[in-house]
Image 1 (cartoon, helix red, strand yellow):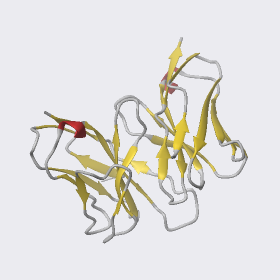
Image 2 (tube, one colour; image 1 turned 60 degrees about the vertical axis):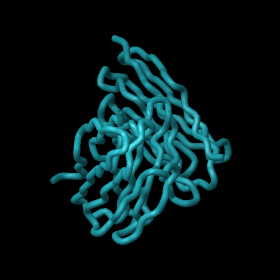
Image 3 (tube, one colour; image 1 turned 45 degrees about the vertical axis):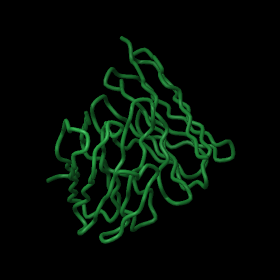
Image 4 (cartoon, chains in turn purple, brown; image 1 turned 135 degrees about the vertical axis):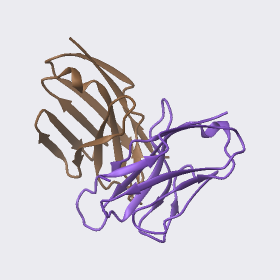
Length: 115
Length: 109
């Protein structure tokens, strides 16, 4: 693995189904993020984690949950998918342990369609 | 509320120079980022400004004026591969990134 991987690449899901999007990074970054990207809107933060064992809510957390059991993995779960959750989902990570600019590195994205 | 404004779309000619503007109103300021995103791909980091002034990196430069809540990304010697969306993001007082909707740059030969 080099950088951040996400799975699946794309998924079509029936409304009401449960779905987990996977994200793994091998850069030992302490901070990880989940964003959704919709046409005409900026990236919107769903949930974040500043370090393993802690998580926080972003701008649009409703209908989503996350966990951070270890440094590398940060799965995003949709408990009961709805059509408004159709979007492209990006996972990102950053090293927030120093005072430098802390750029975020992005995974390739998961394109999710909820019917 | 927090707001990042950028033009939706711009068109420029190969070999020319283009300036993409970004204005922001956020709760706190801890730096401004520019990212490039090609269609169907992930955003990739271009530049970072935290102090006023110009940061130059090859063909790309980014400028910041904190008092005006304003930044621009300057792309010189445009190449066809520069056709992409350019995303402006501000890190707020909670150290979270607030993102603009992006500017789609179309390069014509």
